Amino acid sequence: MGNQIELLIDLQVIDRDLRVRSEAIASLRAGVEEIEARMAAERATLAACDSERTPLDTRRREIEAILADASSKMTERRMRLNRIRTEKEAAAIHREIEVAKEETEELEEELIGDQGLYALLKTLNERATELQEAIDKLQTERDTEHARVEVEATEIADTMGADQERRESVASGLEAALRKRYETIFERRRGLAVVEIEDGACVGCHMSIAPQMANEIRRNESVIACPSCHRILYLKPSEPESQERA
Ligand SMILES: [Zn+2]
Image (cartoon, rainbow, N blue to C red; front, side, top):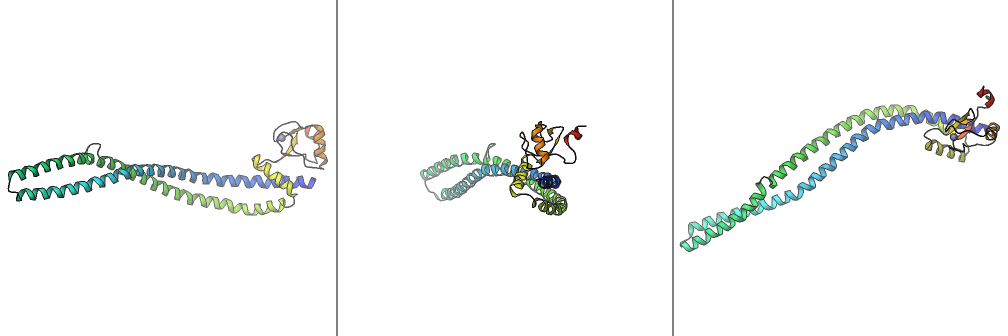
């Protein structure tokens, strides 16, 4: 068991060191992710702007088509006016012209009024352009930052390879169940799975360890966990508890 504890202590030193570097890489990448999140938010706003714009634009085209049609009919009527012979016919065409004008006036108002489609679409188009520019700017910022960060991250990662191999070689000396147990605690306890007993207490959680349990740990016959935080406990074999206290 003593050998197993020593391996765990060695492994934890390597793992803590690797963890510091992994966290450094993660925090570098978090900066890029933050920009990506801002981009996603701008894209969502742009999509909302587009979905507001689409039906208005459809309606604009519809009205423009109706007005174009009305305009050619109006031309036709005016040509007919030039050819008519009776007052009665002229009056009928004039009435038709009046009715048609009223019909088109409302549609024109829908297009060109203060709250008309042209004004609304202009505002939305400007908004969409602004959003697209903001997105493009963020994309450039993101790409630059990503390139910079990946250089640094790669430099850090390159220093980790040898330690990862060393870690595997140390870990391979552990019993499978113990290794799994250690790795679970290491993750759960943020990089502190194996702790010393100092002044009769667990260094991980400061809970007092019963002398009987401390003696058991000193005998090194089995792997014993802190009853409170479940970290694996050890005593430095060369330094009995009584000397540590002195
Ligand atoms: Zn503890």
